[in-house]
Length: 276
Image (cartoon, rainbow, N blue to C red; front, side, top):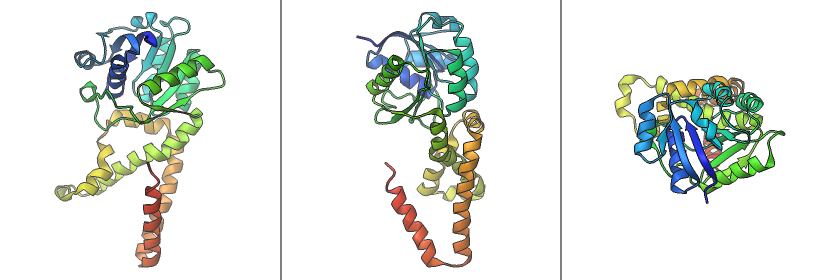
């Protein structure tokens, strides 16, 4: 038996389309409708089997029992305000954005059954053309309820993520943004800085190390601009810590302190080994 009768996914990019395909393949929704600001993206999602039909206006939300906001973080709050005008009572609305505090505060005030979610899955690639049915399998999905979140809603959305292979982890929106500043947003910034530092004439000699370290710098600029600005304060704190580490490395190199350098390298190696 399906968990939902009608699911509307607004934003049929990589995450939205992969979610739609996962829902359909596991028969968790009787009907999945996709909307996109780029109609060709929604049509591609339909041809790929990720959605049943393409919607062209938000009025398709009026019959939904789940609406998924899969758009850039700087668009989610305004979209939630628009969706609130169409949804029926008790319709669940979730987002999949990479920042949470501002979104949960504002969207939660607009929609009683709003629940912030962030699946820690994805790619630097974008669009429905790169969708993956098992994109969420084995990944963490952070869910950020508030004191006002209903237990039934939290239970149902947690079960949804489990059924598509993710492991739900409950955090406050504030905790989420502080953690992701270090584990996701800072790595993106450092990858960008690294690739910009390398002289272009040297790129032909880039090995797997450079490619691995800068892979995420190929991500969508508009999407990440919004993420960086939305989590600006936490990201600035993370950058401060990163500068301190760089300064320490710079000092041991200047002083030719090989023992301390080896100690730093060994410490980093052991810490990296704890990353699952």
